[in-house]
Length: 536
Image (cartoon, rainbow, N blue to C red; front, side, top):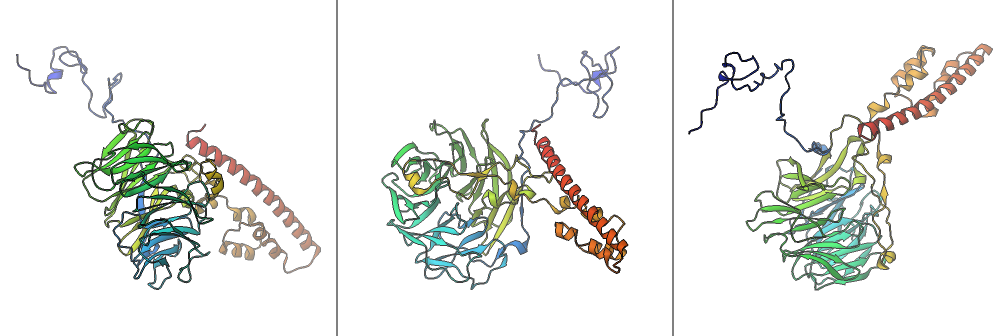
């Protein structure tokens, strides 16, 4: 027996004696949209369920043209490095240089066109391949070069005024070019370097000595190195398609995953805060991939996603505070970002920032350098062929209070250990600091308390009122006391003296009232912030 054709809408109401809302088989007829009658209850909802995430609406916004760094000759060396390093004080960019290697160090506020004669850091005799700021000193930067050396530099306060040619220390131990630099996340003066001689060296920068030499572990070129959160181990991605977890102090390979990605193009691996490993690479069909690995079981990835078939190496940037990974491809014009969670599929795509120009490199601002009053959760410094363009990632929030769910305590500038303690076997994670102190209320919030109206409520002389209205709203106690003396000018009578005493007493009372109200406002803002974030 063949299937009968689907019944038309008219057929559902043609059974004799059927109710207006009943079909020909006694099945209720759904009312048209917007015409839900009394007693009607739909049996099911077809609303699409979307995974809840506070980062689902993160959006990227490039800064204005005048806030970019223009006329910079970005390096053309063929090496899969970021070519850019950023901290809350400076941005450093590897640039083209004749007769050696050099990189620019610019104060963050020095935007606009950079003069060709601007001084550089130019002590290397070969092209610079990688640079990284010390996480415990915003004026110390390390560089690796094709001249087989690692140099550590001290940048003067305020930036360079003349070329910097003398490093603080030169670290010599590699027999081939040095392409990877990585500071220890929680120990002072401990620096890792990896070269094309397939050797990893751990240095004590404070003494210039080589602490550990790890050779024979990598049969081929090392693509990337990433320290764990507490710095007790690091993971590497190698040209032999293996990901290794290494304990530098014992000099042993703890874990190894062969053929993490089947493709022959470069891959990268980074440690996450919970000890998992996030990798980027290529499939056998040259499709770009992302993978998440549990170090307790490296047989199969926890999650694996294929992105596209572009050929640029993917550079991952990880925020341990929010568990968001930003992926930038060299030669791409986009930044993809993903949230890592404990629920399958573990890697959740959030969004993509897209621009017109391809990126030749990318810098990443540490969390303590962000503007928390604008809900900024990441800032990139995108390298074009001739300029550096900051890109701001923001979580849209209606409230302009401090958002403590977006800004948990983050790694601060103080080290947890000294190099000697770490060598002796001690392990500690980074010392955390709160970003609440960096929160600066917006001008709109400052104007909600109108101190001008409290001080000048119609009793002052017209000249004083006009002067105060033309000036900015006073904020400091000294500026609040500057208006009353103007009231006593013109006469020295006892009545005027009594009036002055009365005004001064009133000012003192108002100052006490303002202080009390300020404390009350602070308490109410904290309660409101907890309510908005669900912490009742």
